[in-house]
Image (tube, rainbow, N blue to C red; front, side, top):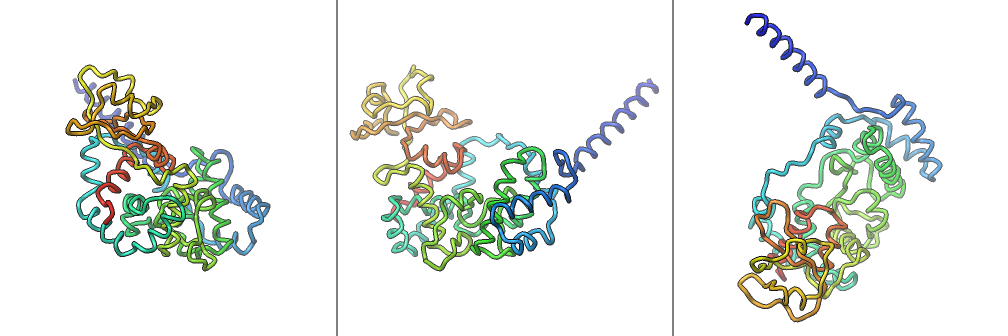
Length: 330
């Protein structure tokens, strides 16, 4: 018995050591020391046309951030039901603030909405879901975060590309180095654009020569609207609606890949909440049941698919749609 206890203690000690070692694992480079890797990166940046002064300033005090690696490794939790997620992410205070901000910025939002073909309530909803209307945009140095992830071996190629684009953004003078803050993954500003999204979609709407998604509302709104518009947004459609299904409904039809005109869904017994007929307009739509939704079902349109291009999370796209519906016209 004593022998078994001693063996157990040894095993526990060994396991504890392994756990501590795992917790302390540093950034794992694929093949070479950081200084050599950084020298090669600087060479690539120069070849991309980025000035030496920008490169040297960006990396003068560069550091690898262990917390960034930890967050990147962390597996997303799926303990929340869809209903719990929506309740937590879309409190009434967020809706009320969204209504107030839509009214406060109505002239600008309507101007931008008309130019890009995006309803103002969706611009405001994205703003609210992404950063609580600019109140939380992330406190990580974008250069340090992207450098960490580019040097790490898990998704090195992707983040190396994002890092080079971040240097390009600095080189063009859109934001000072010290103010280039964002999420642990390098998503920036009030619209939480990755550098590649910034380069593709960010807009200098106020014409000051900078695409400022950090502090300039006009640029934030126009950049979000431009992203949606160029990703296929339709101004004369909404995102979707909650529906009910008849008893015995074929579950294989509940799939974003299955698209049918509204009349076909009506014929299959799909109805509005409350039992009313579906709209007579023959939009092509699909049925979606978010994971852990307890059977809650939505009939979604092309704009829902566009929201998924912004963020592939079903919960994210639904939260934007829900918030836009609750904000309404202010």
